[in-house]
Amino acid sequence: MSEDKPVRDEGVPSDAAAPDVEAVPAGAEPVPVTDDPAAVPVAPSAEGPAEPETPEAEAPGAAAPAPASTHQVVYVETAPPPRKRGNRVIGVLLAVLGAVVFAAVYAVVAALIYFLGGDAFFGDRFGTFVSSALFWAPILVFVLAFILEVVIVNRAGWAAHVFGSLLLAFVVYFASIGLLLLVGNVFTHQNLAFSAVALVPQVIAAAVIAREVAIWFGLAIAARGRRVRARNTQTREQYDRELAEKRAQYENRPAERVE
Image (cartoon, rainbow, N blue to C red; front, side):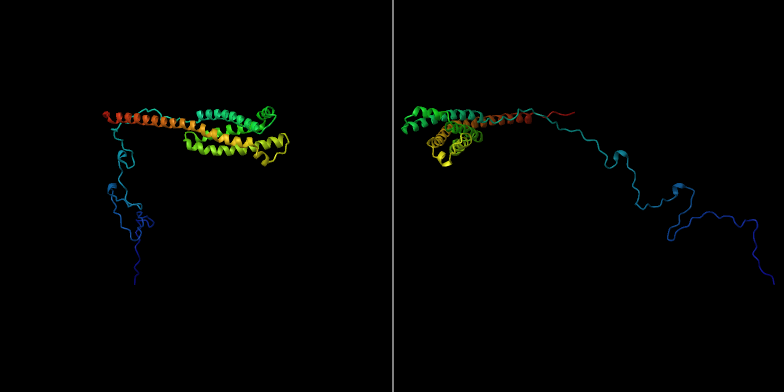
């Protein structure tokens, strides 16, 4: 009994390599083999289908040429608006003039106080008074307070000056007492008391005179302030009228055609 033995083809080497064949994963579709490179399908990308390229001129986001503007901007030169005129400079000058009047009236009233008091040394006492702090302290307080009031009030009416005159009288009275106490206790060592200085007739008269002078000079300052307000209003109305006319001329002008 003979055994069948496999016949070995010696003409073909046993270790000849077969053509390389890539392993196809399970579930994948087979790819046909062809020599035409254009017929080979492209595997879809994980990022989605590729978008067709657009020309550079039509690419999204590219700046399109701006159309020619048909509007023309015209710049009109106008004068600056008029500044409002104030009343402070003339008011300060009137306040200084009021201080001169206050000093003169204060001196006359003090002379009457000495004269009516039956003072035998009227001339000597009055001369000493004019050169003392009792005379100059109220004047200094009045001129400073009145100038400050005029600067604050500016173009206001007479009612503001009437109210300011009351404050001015209180300031003159109490500030004069303070200055007299300072001069008497610090410089001359007289040990003056507040009640003694507060009851001096000249100090009381200074407060009353300050109120009256401030009222009447305030009337003059308020009158000029009223004229300044009217002039400012007139100037502003004229400026607005000229500006409106100039704008109307440019708006009614036929538009120039832009080629």
